[in-house]
Length: 206
Image 1 (cartoon, one colour):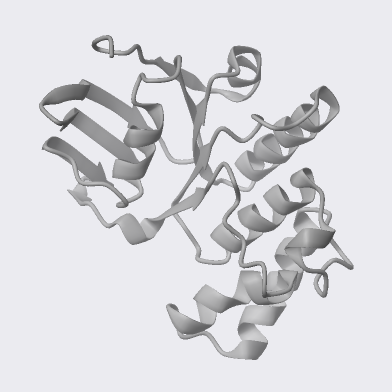
Image 2 (cartoon, rainbow, N blue to C red; image 1 turned 135 degrees about the vertical axis):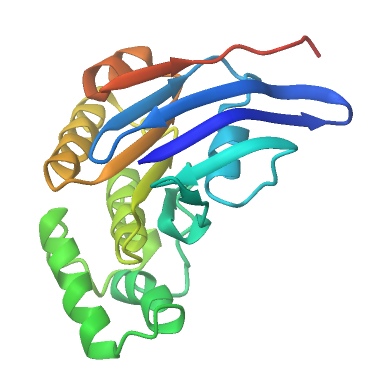
C-alpha cells in the first residue's frame, strides 16, 4: 500500500503541490487528473524518487519509502535508441538486479508475450509505432519487479483506438495484481480505468 501524507513542493518560492494526501491500496489503479501546471508530473516524479519533496511523507506498507519499488513509464518512453527491444528490457535487470542474462531474457520474453509484442525482440525503437514503444517501455519497467507502476500521460499521443488498447492493457495488468498510478489530462480514460481519482488544480497563476 502506498501512502502519501501532506506532500508539499515549491519551485522558486512558488508552491506547486500543497497538502497532497492519498492512499493507494495494493492492486488498485489511481488516476491523477488536472490541467497543465497543476503539478501532476511533479507529483509522479517525487513518488518515483526523481524529484525531492520539501515536506510530507511517502510510505510503502507503512515503511520508510524506497523509490526502487516504483517503476515509471515516461510520456516519451525513454527507450535506448541504440538497443533492440530485448536489450532495452534486460539492461537494468542484469545491471541493477544482477540477474543472469538467461534469467533476464526468459522474463523479457514472458513480458513480451503478456503485452502481445511477440516477435519484436530484435527490432529497434525507430521500427516501432508509438503504441508499440509504450508496450516496450511498460515491459522494461515491469522487468524491474516494481510494487507500483506509474505512467505519465499514457494516452497523450494516441488515437482513440490505441487509447482503448491502453485501457485494456492497464486493466489486464490490474488483474495480475499490479498497483498502478496514472497521470493524465484525459478525463474519460481516467474514469474508465480508475478505482479512485485524485483531481489537482494549479495553486497559482504564472
